[in-house]
Image 1 (spheres, one colour):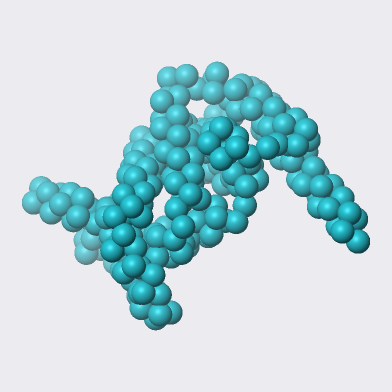
Image 2: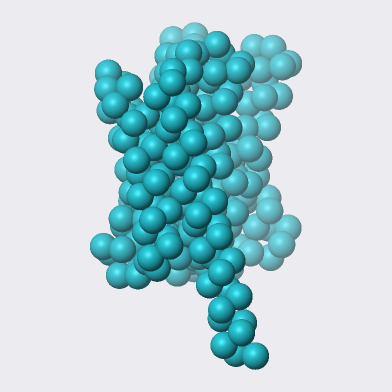
Length: 261
């Protein structure tokens, strides 16, 4: 599945770049070793993230996967403060403390699969950090990443095909879903890369609680995984933190407007 996502994403991105006249920035990236090295690192992080996530879902560890993305915002905030020297307002620190308490409770109830969550959290947080620090257009940068991952994807698909394990072309539904996976992969990552360049890591991190909440609810409501009282408390704390963070942001924006009025 991951290899198919990479190749179909690459085809889609190349088509979009060609249609929108964006091949110039893409080719410019390929001529700059420093940018290529940075994007090779981000490609490895996102590749590890995709692979771990797909394995976790197929192994019925949906909640462990969602926990990884609950941990990820905290890692992103920490990287923003430590690496990028971003400063947090008091309201933001209180909000993050609530979210951290919720995630800690959730992690304590899932120690056996905690490694899955940690790999997902760290890999995506470092992916976001590298994309924020790498001055390339979002679509061209993602194109370079998928191009760098493509040889690995082709090699694995060749091995899989020789062992009769390739799913593409087996039936119409599977083939269509694999093709659509390119768009499903590309659109969120382009939007994320755009946001990473424009937003502080703290803001970007806290907004990322929306996706794992939906994943967690899918695990409980669609896949029948058990929701404990501790996990329910975790949700309450995390969403209180999100509300506090949003309130602090609105208040700060109003003060800024009043100061410039």
